[in-house]
Length: 347
Length: 292
Image (cartoon, rainbow over all chains, first blue to last red; front, side):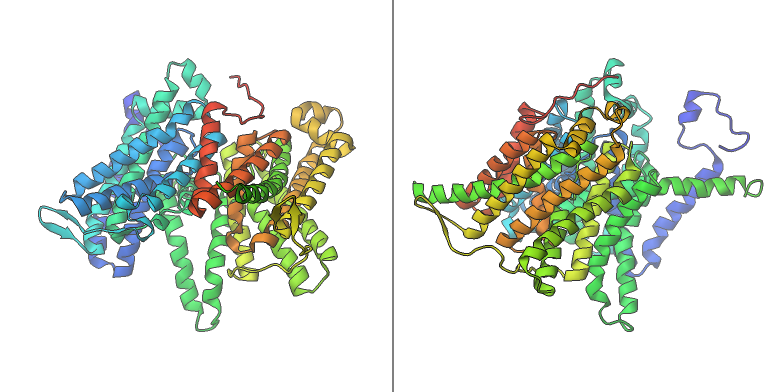
């Protein structure tokens, strides 16, 4: 906390914008995000889009796992539902992308509620296994319901469009993905200033106590599932528009684990952590690819070792963060900020 | 309906189920003693099977030496994992500990690909080859002998936990940690032993399963089937692990044979979903009572 920044009302304590410095930095960030696609090369632009999609999905999982304490191994499945919804709508209707993405979110949310229903009876790890079962069923449906999902070949879809404009390139997709990511974060930030969001946090901290306080557990758990899968569905829809092909193999179990890892590495129950985790986990494999490419001239075998090394680094990151930095990247970020706040009085 | 075919498929499924029961036993031992859900059990099996490949195929040792060495290697791996990565997580939330085991699984897959490459491999033959007939029914020899070995080890385990000092210590720790500690049981050692014994069972089962189905870095997927087994049986129930292991093994094989390979996982997970809805703590699991 800054010196001379004593909060006097609850409202002031909950405020998103607390200082003009913060507003200035945020404006700067927006300008940078706006300028990025004009300056970046195609590869960086591609990465920017990937990170944006990952941020939306990670934020969704963070609502469920980080804030409500319900661990889910079904995130990739929900994303798949969103992606297939968008793909099907794009092939069979002429709806513009805001409508299809909204539909993707809603369908995924409905599936999420269905999957969340066992949370009335089971919790903790049993619930995790229930979501795992859901992801197995979803994968099965994606692969076998051939008339809708196209089976193993999947679906190829037309580019996203709005008012006759087609969003074909990564450059154009960037202007859909990044505003949506910002909107998603803004909604999530506000969610936890409301009654509903605080109920989620109460459930996470001790669900029995929360119930005694008058929070209907099933209703709020299902709400959390619905919101989280809505985010996943939108992210999946963007994924579909971005790659313009959807197959059952696009959404493997390892993807669910990837998002859980992003939430953990970033910091559970922290929106900033979700952003950092999503960006970090997306960029680590790319960094490794660059490193491999740089090493290949001196060591021709390097590409062979890349994919195993990626597995090892992925696992080591999860284990390492959980053991040594359980609050994740967000905590590291907080430490850095505090250092600058107190500098030069404390070093 | 062809009853002979059904009988043969069922028999193969039951034999496979016996091996599932052995793996599930390893899983339950670890869970009972330490309350850790071990998502890395499939990868520990895989690692032991690759060790066997290295000893029997690479170093040309006889199976009589290679199998015990590989199994001990798997057990050692379990002990090391517990000491280095699970112990520091003591007292953390179950979600965090589960994620650590998922991380370990990823590390093991990476290590295996690094050392033995990602290509599928065949294990050297080490089980007798003459076909086995039970009445009219033919059973593939690898599966049959794997089942017999698995059952012998399973029986040894059950006897050990019933009668030996170590087994009593483990059961005491499982039922009340604080009381066990105050009675002079070295709870830390019990934790470590549980991981060693659990991984030992998994390692042996891994070699037997890999001998019938081949080996690749994706072998760890079998861990998902085992997860279904232990949830259906009840996480902390040895009887449950045995019953559910045999049943799920049978169901998976029959569903695979009659409906096609794509139906194996959905069939078992459907059973899992039904069990979770109607008996959330599994068929034989302890219903946990929570107090604020």
